[in-house]
Image 1 (spheres, helix red, strand yellow):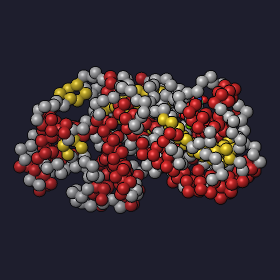
Image 2 (cartoon, helix red, strand yellow; image 1 turned 60 degrees about the vertical axis):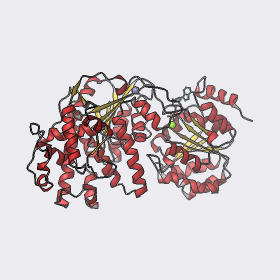
Image 3 (cartoon, protein in one colour; image 1 turned 90 degrees about the vertical axis):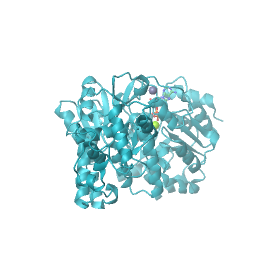
Length: 558
Ligand code: ADP
Ligand code: MG
Ligand code: ZN
């Protein structure tokens, strides 16, 4: 009978480590007892060893199912380097190579076989599974199996029903670094893992410093930041291909060594750009969220998000690509109020069922709330994940540290908030700004807003300034654009306090120049507006209901 002492031996002789890390012993013990188990550990926490050591100690071949095709080769290579026989099966293999490997698997040559979910599901592979001695199945990146996860892979989920046919396989392990309570629940029920077999060491990563930057020109911020961190490697995430190209172009133009990556580039270019980044030939990677899953680069010193991510899971995972080596690293989110609209738009056009959309809206709301919280940012996310081991404030995020100089904008805020109230909280930022500016716009007259006491109250400011300040109020949580997909401004409890004079509104001194016309948000919304106009002349029609499929396609190219 194998025991933990054997495991300790293997840890030392094969991997060269003296001690197990938190959670590893428990998981390995369960595996050696052939019990189903789920391990939740932060990125870099050492999940691989939790299946590699049992795989070495138990008879038969361990099958590791992983959606990360790009990592398989590296993982197999590093096992082979320490004298462990392993192979992988995925779509990158030639027919000949594939047949050859399948043959060797049948011969029982390998201790470990890494396989992509869709390959696992092939008839050929499944029938092989029934013929050989399998020690266990490990589901790496197990959150991808849950439709509540942010990175759901239907092909991964489709494995579950066929597990019935594979009931000779003694047990299953699940491993993941990002899972909300619902996702954990889901994985447990899909893989039949009971409560006592879930080992959750938490998600906390002390070396990550989270920052939130609001109301600043994003391109300027990035240029300034990169200038100060010239020697360091970092990733900049942007929400659209077009924006990736534009930020990438900007960096090249300023002479920085930047790579780029998105689904619109050929596979060849993507591979080249990725390897230049990994090998530090290029220090900065500008990418959409297509980049990063399965990238194992330890010295990433910063991750900047150019815009609001779709939810906390996605953000924590993307930001978490910084500092895998444990060194202090910065995770910066550049937020402006308009960002929310893009994410709502993406949810609307996602083709999800209404029920799923409601879920996504809720998750988006939690992401927006992250941008409004005045408490520790790191603690906010750990709370979201229901982290069992979170204690207190991190001491180094924006909210734990900021002492910036602030300016009092309470009066401006009161004007805007009371105008929103007088417009019955039924309109968006554009029309509200027009009313405050005292515009003679057709719609202002039509709704008789020129009779409101707030009409023209901010006449001395430009419409753009007013709109920007409204977006600031949204970003700060004085206004929301509602739960619905229509961006109508609504007052929050915080706004009520401001209107009653019980609360002041401060804006942090913006040391970096205000947004100019090259600002992405402005451009995006101009494009949205133009498109909308080209379809319906009526500005009253909320934008989301009138886009045709063809238009949606145009927009996804923005
Ligand atoms: P992840 O949880 O992200 O899958 P990995 O399994 O890739 O993490 O492990 C991250 C790093 O930690 C690897 O370099 C691994 O060798 C190392 N590691 C794992 N377990 C231990 C340990 N007990 N002691 C020291 N280093 C370890
Ligand atoms: Mg891993
Ligand atoms: Zn903090």
